[in-house]
Each structure stands twice: as C-alpha cells, then as structure tokens.
Length: 271
Image 1 (cartoon, rainbow, N blue to C red):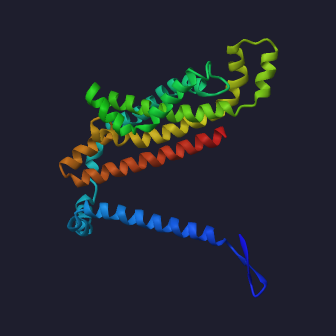
Image 2 (image 1 turned 90 degrees about the horizontal axis):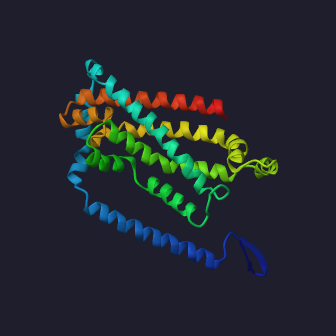
Image 3 (image 1 turned 30 degrees about the vertical axis):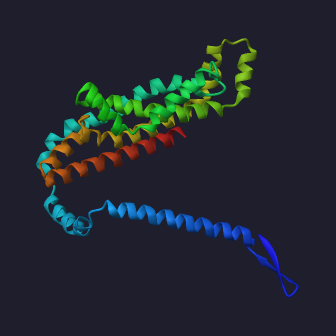
C-alpha cells in the first residue's frame, strides 16, 4: 500500500511503484515461460491427429454403445482380484508404515540423528514413485499377476500412511504421556497407554482413506500385467473390443463410487 500526492493532496494507491514494477516483471517472465513451453508442446504434437480427434472419438463412442453385458461373467473374478489387491495391499502397507512412523516422529524416534533420517528416506522413496511404475518394475522381477500388483500397492502406500501417521504422533497431547511416565511406566507401556489411544482415530481414518485410493489405483495396474480388472481392460483395448471396454469402464466407475460411499461412511463413523 502506498500514498501519493497530487496537488498537495494525498491519494491512496494499492502498491508503490517498485512493487508494481516487480509484479509486471513477474508477469512478463511467466508469459515468456508459458510461450516457450507452448512452443515445445506444439513442436511435439501431430496436429492433424489432434484436429481429427473429435471424429475418432465419436466413431469409438458409437462402436462402444451398447456395452456387451454378456461379458460381465468374465469380470467378476478380475474385479475380486482388484478388491484383494487394494485391501491386502493396504493392510500390508499399514503393518510396515506404523513402525516407520514411530521412527520418523520426533517425539518417539529412538535416534533423531540416525534412525529418523532413515525413516524419512523410506517415506520419501515410497511416495516419490507411482504405483504404476512400481508395478511395471515388479512385473519384470516377480512375473505378471496379482502378487506383483499387491506388492506395488503396498510399497506405494507405506510413505503415504507413515507420513500422515507420524504427523499425528507429533501432534499428540504430551501431558498424557508425562502423566503415564510419572507413574513409572516403561517405554512400551507409555506407547500403549499414552500414545496409541490418541492416534487411533487418525490411524483408522488414514487406513480407510488409503484403501479408497488403492482401489482406484489397482484398477489400472493390469495395464502393465499386474492383474486385476485392468488386465481385462488392456486385452479389450488391444483387440479393439469397444463394447467390452465400455462395460469395463462402467464396472470400474461403479466400484469407485461404492468405495467412495463406504469410505465416507466409515470416516463419518470414526470422526
């Protein structure tokens, strides 16, 4: 905010001259960066395909309707595999994320100098790589199938769950911990009676939220051979069976909607 004078009278201005010049300079730099990025994207784009996209989309949409309802009999087992990948992957991730979270939290780590950096490295490493990339790598190591997808989901979820959980641990009420410690309780008793009861609501919410995310992610792991309904989607896409593709997409949409409803109900009951 600045005040300038005109004919000896003070006039209010929102910004002074230097601040306004800095803002204009930032806009100019931002515009230049945007134009450069647009040039790079434009050079790498095949524009005839882009302009022909509406016609192709309309043609595929016409071929995909109506869905092939008779194909539903072949989707129950892949859908069950997808649910198992999401559920078991979440459980495995939580089992590994809990000790990592306690090692990462400042108020529970055994060593802030040695143990905590290792725990934080595990969290960052897990979160930095997408589950689809984990699945692509694990399919090469373990072979195609549900097990590779299960491990990919669990590895990806460790960092997410551990990060939220260790933040919840650091935000606990220390007076309760001090009161239990004053009774002569051991370290494990303090953790069981002073820390765990305070973080259990957060833990339950994190578990349900991550399960909801994992169910969405597990639907596409089959595209790289990690099992589940995504494998049926890839097979249908490869054979240009568009009625099957539309049915699979409807099933995935319904599964995601149901999982969202379930997770919302569970989180509402917890909170």
